[in-house]
Image 1 (cartoon, one colour):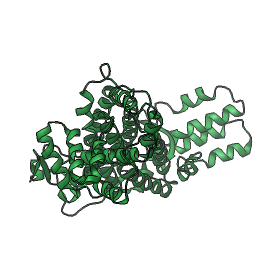
Image 2: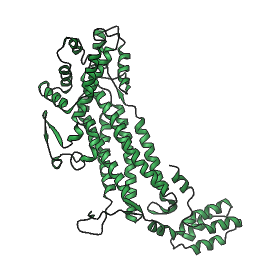
Image 3: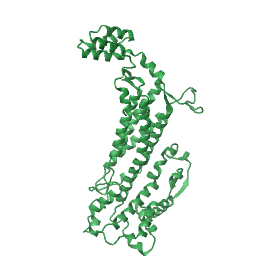
Image 4: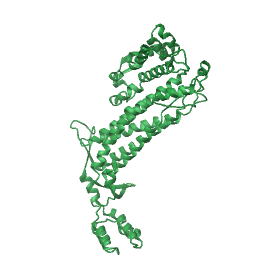
Length: 470
């Protein structure tokens, strides 16, 4: 299979080995090992393989329809033969399709002729061949092939990797649920949180975005040249072609779209692209936050003895994995944004601008996969520096101003916010300053005692509980 040939590319209909150092795309060059799971899906080989699957499954579906006499039922031998064309599809088969295409100058017609060849010249296959591509326009085949490609990539590559990332973050959030940490709003010191709670926020956000991606309905159409079953109805006016089409598309695991032009309008592809882009945006936010915490010293990075952080500064250990993830997510989102804007638009009953664009889905998803791998690698390399985190929060007594003025509000002390503002703004706030102010308050003694026991490290609200609940 093509996984074992990752350093090969098509040239015409022959294969020649090319070093990854000469790859035009970094996905097939520098990062080729990270995207291997997508090659069988989105390569030219993958597209041909899914086209063959759709053509064969349509032929089999027609043979099962009583309203379409003349084709079935198929003998066990023919059933096995058709199944083998799909199940045993190989790189050599894909090469043969490309060779046929060099003559036909039509990629989908080449698939039809390839299947004809595979069926052989026996008398039992003569009628069967005449029903290959019956009632179809090329887009009937292509839209289902692309739908199956994106569905396969989502279920077999994207979601599994997203789950791995979530599990790492979830474990991190729970492990550090009680590590008190200074918050920063507008870059300034703010009410304390915990390291675990801040990671848990991303667990929940990524979980929601992943769920949204998984919920996108992947749709397909199979209704002829302009979506009206024109040829079908002329050939078999008594057949329920809408029902036949819906059963066929549904059997492929897709949602039938009954109202289309020549092309499926690709609205679901826009939904898919937008959902994946939103996931990527959350992940960019995580990468930037972790990068910033590394900069503050909240995390140390595990050191590889032979690794170099800078060509000139020997002390450096750079957060390159999070930077790599952020950059590749940006590339992915740029492409996904174009898909979402372009693909639902087609002149009248169709133009061909969608065809070349759809071929780049694998590139965009490749950037996502590279980013997911980089983010996971980055998480595996960081270690919490409790000393640095603790030093930042230990002396931040001004953070208790919020707590004190809120309790003052409860007990009707006049102008609580204004008094704490006057006490804390523009000056160094110490434990003694805060405690001295608390002692002057006219509030119940137990409340005063509770405020006096409070420290920046213990003023955490429900942060620890929220960190564990992710």
